[in-house]
Amino acid sequence: MGQMFDTPALARLSALLQEVRNGTLLIPEFQRGYVWGDEQRLRLMDSIWQGIPIGSLLVWRTGSDKGLKVRTEIGPCTLPTPRAASVRSYVIDGLQRLTTLYAALMPLPEGHERDAEGRRWPIYFELAPKAGDDLRFHLRHGQQEVSSTWMPLSCVLDDDLFFEFRAALVSRGHKDLLQEARRLESRFRDYLIPVVPLVSEDQELVTEAFARVNSLGQDLDEGDMAHALTLGDAFSFNGELSSLTSQLSSVGWEGVDRKVVIASLKAIWNLDIYKSGAKGIQGKLNTTEGRDLLRALPQIFEPVAELLRGFGVHGPGSLPYTYQLVALLRAAQRLGGEKVLGAADGLRTWFFWSTYNEHFTGMTSGQLRGEFERLEALIRGERALDWLERPVVTPLGQLRANAVRSRAAILAMAIEGDGLTGGSKQQRLYGARGTEALQRLFPGESPYILANRVLAEDEDLKRLREWLTPGQLRLTTPEVLQDDLLRRNHLGFVLEKKSVTAASPFDAATLTDAHKILRAREYALDLFEAEFVEDLGAKWQPDT
Image 1 (tube, rainbow, N blue to C red):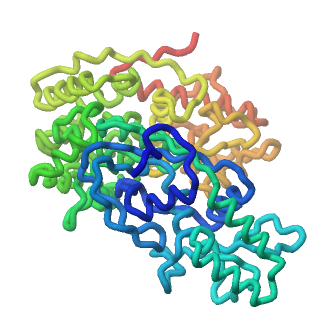
Image 2 (cartoon, rainbow, N blue to C red):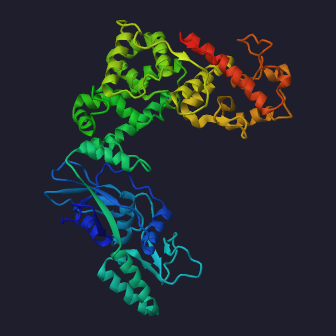
């Protein structure tokens, strides 16, 4: 390869695609699959036609062979075997655009008008548009006949195919369109794309770059790099992770983020959570013990999931802190699931005290390791819970659904609501869907107060709203007041666990508008969370 990627440069599209075709610009396996739809592909072509920038490509240049597996196909096209070279160049951002451009502009193998995912190729350009056509790029639909004025983009950068197309155009009586065909060829052949090199031998830096540049799209992570480093005929790290998360469905944790799984594996493998990246993971995956622990994670998970269900956490959506789960999984692997379950009372206090104290916020990797060790000493009975202060909890002010204090209040609301009616409906809903399960009780009222949010499926929400329509309030009969749906959502104002004083706002006859209903519900939620907090041995400090 020449000097194209030594410094930031504007590369001609034709030269860039030739680098891919020659096997000197490589696409590593850690890149996620191609996901663009038809409109995205056509709009990309239209941007080039109109001279609109399509963004830069980020290329990693390294002077050593990192053993990375590379793609052998791009779209419907087969890629060449990588050339032996002193410098390797890998595309690390821009795969969707590069795949689209390569598959559209390179000659397609005969009979390959669809790729492995069923996407249609080639892409055509309408040389004789009708008035009002805002998009001149097209795909064939089914057995649709190709128009005589459609120019396949696959002939634009190939001199022989372009000559043949122009000759055919003349033979079909479209000599007047030759100039338009030349304009299209010139636009694509000379189109410039910024190429930004990342010249480094540090794989951790490159992994961080992947994650950052993809933060607004499909995230790449250190697991993808580890996948590429360890990919073989009989092993795929990404495949193992997919299988593992699927197995967790039996305990309600199929939605757990793969980054959480990777962090848990690091803790179990005794790797540094933050500092040990793809290289550390690769080292463990290259050992039988490391792979065995990976495949054992579903079994390690079972007692931890049972323990967390006892705390009201039925899935990843309601977990306050990722590292609470990581710490428990590490302990279960080291000490055994029965030992962890046997320490449930002490662990419940640790779990909620660490939540209300926001204990894990901003922890370094060293502090995390210390927490893991203290927790295991607690489970073994060798240490009291003396490193956490007794929480002092004040009523929730503004609801921020993903803030830890808010998540604690939502979890307490779910636990106490289910406690009034039996079962675990709200806890399971919150665990499965997280904050997406929070619905507004009154659409016109603020979403930032907990009293206006309920954990409810759409049908239940509809019933609640029907009962609570201002001016048509139907909360006056004992039968309605005792309805499980109302009670579960802290709207049954006959409270079995509380003595209602004259000062409390629970007189259903006065609940004539949304504001009064929300005030009464806020009062109820505070009462229940206060009881919940005090039951944990923490201190509830009401607003003064």
